[in-house]
Image (tube, rainbow, N blue to C red):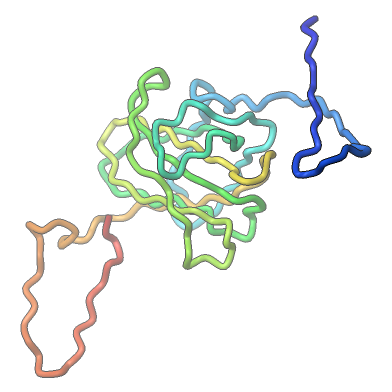
Length: 193
């Protein structure tokens, strides 16, 4: 309050200037704009909940690097691990902005990257992202939902699903296959990490 801010307006990619229309809007920053204000989420097993990246600023606290957008607005959520695998997806008709999902553990002052979302190419909504990770019982996980390439936020439909990891998800649980003389064997990568 009482601080004076100076705004520089430029016309990139032109050799000349021109008229510029500005819209200046005040808003209250979302409580979960920072990690310490994260909102608790629970698995909703195929029900979709709507969260929002609106009224948030670009995030600089993510320690995940592949799917992290330092200039994208984002909001923070948390959930407690129960030893099961979790899938978080923004593949929903309720998702109105591109999304990036990062999952971290630790504390807000000392975060460690657990998993980073990837574009969900199986989704009709091309702006969707999904992430899968195995939780530890009692561990708190911090989830950063960002809206890259927008400069503003919007609604995101999230589905958070628990599942048991397949027995053969690790090498130690591998399943023996036998030659079958030109027969096709159907295998699955579902319920794997």
